[in-house]
Length: 77
Image 1 (cartoon, rainbow, N blue to C red):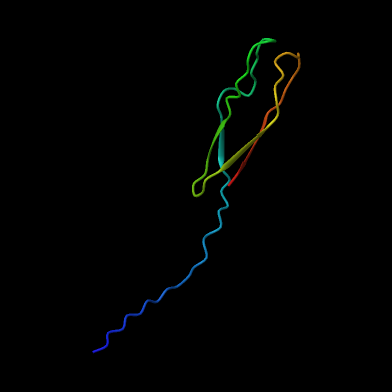
Image 2 (cartoon, rainbow, N blue to C red; image 1 turned 90 degrees about the vertical axis):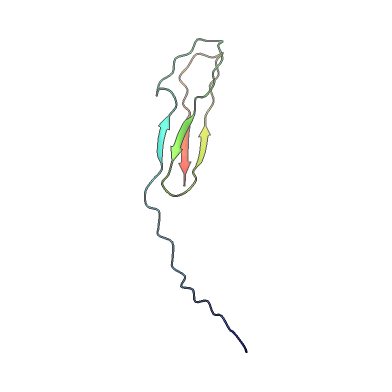
């Protein structure tokens, strides 16, 4: 006696993720620090409904030089 089993599968495309990630600053948009003090980038938190997100930060703060500095965060899902 032969017993055969068959599996049928239907492959469906994954839905397109059209919702951008949500990004929250850890700290304020403006941070004031004293010359010569240390600076620890507070970073961001990023969330997406369906995938992991990649966070890229660009920019540096020279705490020994007076000035305005910008750190830019880019989030990709």
